[in-house]
Amino acid sequence: MSAPIRTGSSPADAGPAPAPLALTGKLGPLAIVFMVVAAASPLTVVGGATPLGILLGNGVGFPALYAVSGVVLLLFSVGLAAMTRVVPRPGAFFTFVGYGLGRRAGLGAAYLALLTYTTVQAAVYGYIGYILSGTFAQLGLPELPWWLWALAVAALVGVLGYRHIDLSSKVLGVLLIGEIGIVLAIVAGVVITGGDQGLSLEPFEPANVFSGSPAVGLTFAIAAFIGFEATAIFRDEARDPARTIPRATYAAVIGITVFYTLASWGLVMAWGPDHAVDVAATDPGGMILTTTAKYLGTAGEVVINVLLITSMFACVLSFHNVITRYQHTMANAGLLPGAVGAVHARHLSPHLSSLLQSATTVVLVAVFALAGLDPVLEVFTWFAGVSTLAIAILMAVTSLAVIVWFRRTRQDARAWNTVVAPALGLVGLTGAAVAIVAYFPLLVGDVDAAGNQRFGVISAVLLALIVLSPVAGWAQAVVLRRRRPETYARITEAIG
Image 1 (cartoon, helix red, strand yellow):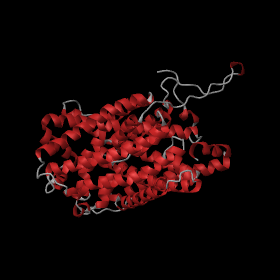
Image 2 (cartoon, helix red, strand yellow):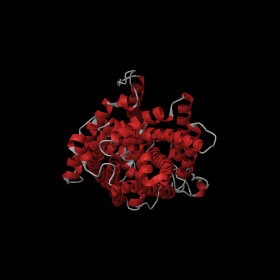
Image 3 (cartoon, one colour):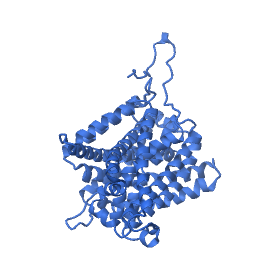
Image 4 (cartoon, helix red, strand yellow):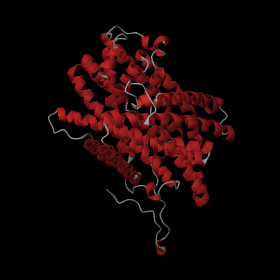
């Protein structure tokens, strides 16, 4: 690999130092959509979250909650897109919160965003390590601990993350096409055969939508969208940011909504409204496999097993890229060590930020392994719960920031884009966050001997992470204002 760019001062006789390299690229809307939709991990959602939503949420009415979530997040996206046009910065959440609600709130959002993406990535590393360990053991190879497989995947992700973003986008595009293709093939098989009990719109009937525990179902549905909002983070590498980012944002949320709604409806129809919940209860993790075997045969089951692994790989690679760019932007604002903001001389990537993120992954996996945590029931479940609540809070705060910013600056007179849609999104996201908190112990498995949820030690520790992260950012802003006012003042250039 080429030597990284040096950004230190040149000797006096060597002339002025060259300007530091910046992130560049020619990503179009489709390439960005591939990366953020890959972060949402469509096949993992259809195979993992959907059966759980059916089982623990509102039963056969769960597919409708993907549509409800999509509407809420589309409303949120209207304000997000409006901000990207007038705030030419790549920091996404923390940039927009900083502009609307001030530097301290912006830094709080920055640290909460890092927690969100770090925990969801950690959760998927636990799951992919578990799947790889079991898969290769079934092939007759020695059964290695899950964390060794997780570290192997982290190494491959690190190599791709170190290089130019175009390489990652191509890899993610190929994997995403495979995921979407197999799911659409299953749905086509269900439609052609008429399903188990015929085709119907029962999942969208009000009686089914509001049955069971729709709040729990809504939590699973919103969690499935995590990653789509990261379009703004790739601003510096977009071909035409003012046009590309809004288009990519709308395309991502609409595409995810339609895909999840259709796929989950197909999963219910595959077994029929009378039997879908029972099938999910028997083996929620294997529901997608048995459905594939039923409608596409053994060959389809083998293919989807492989694609489940590649889906999770695409997820961790995409979030790796997102986190490295968050860190890169924060470093350039003086909030992290300056070296983290360096750009590679040849790859034009935030290579040191990528290495930092890889090191963070290694440390987290090592801690989980030493603590003896179960990769699925604890690593995946706990940290998926943290990231889901954190993202709902982040989006709600961002919606508020959008409203405040445009009311104060009057830079956009469109009421729908700057007030109405963001306000409706704020209401929906706040309601979702409240519902997630209410059912948080159940989400992370913090229950008593009778199976009733309780706010015990696990819930307290994980919820404390969500509280302490923004507090740490707020505290850093206070310290900078007192001790390094020049750095605090420069934050205006990065986050408002």
